[in-house]
Amino acid sequence: MNQINHQVRLAARPDGAVKPTDWARTEEAVPAPAAGQIVVKVLYLSLDPAMRGWMNDSKASYIPPVGLGEVMRALAVGRVVASNNPGFTVGEHVTGLLGAQEYAVTDGAGLFKVDPRLAPLPVYLGTLGMPGLTGYFGLQDVGKPNAGDTVVVSGAAGAVGSVVGQVARIKGARVVGIAGGADKCRYLVEELGFDAAIDYKRENVAEALARHCPKGIDVFFDNVGGDILDAALTRLARGARVVICGAISQYNNTTPVKGPANYLSLLVQRATMTGIVVSDYYPRAGQAMMEMGGWIRAGKLKTREDIVHGLDKFPKAFDMLFSGANHGKLVLQVAAD
Image (cartoon, rainbow, N blue to C red; front, side):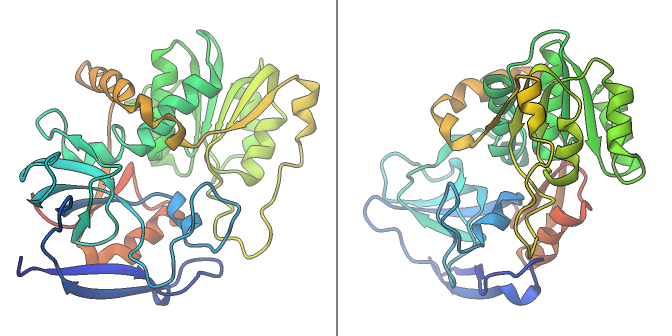
């Protein structure tokens, strides 16, 4: 193809926060696809907190770690530019684990075709991608909200949390979001329709939850862990459902993960705590994308992407996940379509 593929590889296992030296930039020629293979030009990369866990050499995970020297695992959306696979045609757009690189050579396994005429390509990495599917299934299949329930979501302004809150509102629940900073809290209430928002950077979360959830929390969808999870556990209503999606406050720890000190509230309130891994629900992804796509077109579900330009910006963009600098789904544009 006479093209050079620039890549971001994992150079070292991080100890705490990720350092620039944990990444390596490499380049190599793009090979022609072998029988059954396709070449995908990567257009947009998804940057997700889960990627930090993939960098650890840990067997306590739902997915094997990225190997040292390997291209960093990342969800992406791109366009097929060469094909020796009858299932894919040049010009089609696909999404899947294409990696942090400009071109991906793959047999097509695990890829989904997407249509840029129905939604902008970055939306397929957010609301209509892994984060949106996580929120959709985690809330409805695990959280099981009823009309009138009080649903609280941490990391509420992020790609998963913003979907959780909006879907909960569509289902008739009362929604309280926890986010960092006045701008994000205003966004939750004024643009996404949350009933209330708590700014963990300037408010006492436990006191604010008591104020906004006087009858307790029926569903707590947790993306953060740590002290915020502990505060929420003290406010559970009878029969509450706690959905464990992530623990971004713990991912850069150099000490063991802090578990919930207030877990006995689960016993007292006859509550449940259940984890959500979105890959369990991929067989039903089409159904979810159709329903959420309909909500988007009807104006019931809003999307927001924070787009950084250039593969060379990957290390700095990745750090934004943990500083809270991004507003909405964090996406890295690798190339123009």
